[in-house]
Length: 71
Image 1: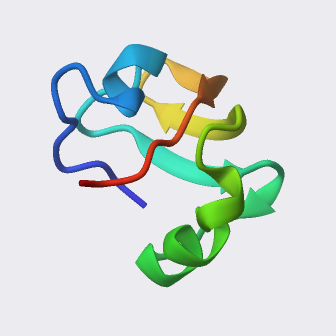
Image 2: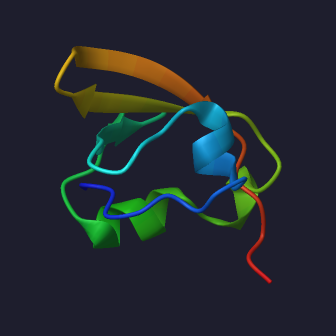
């Protein structure tokens, strides 16, 4: 899933994710589309560190994100 935007001061930005990054996996589970992303980022992950495998121009990296509930 390619990030089209990253909310300033949101969990993704705080973790270092940037517009254009591609989330390839979350906690080792492949993410091939938005449906996968929604399924993996369930209520259990709110407030828990989550490992994202991210692909960007400079290569593949692991990023730790702390999801929060949307208001």
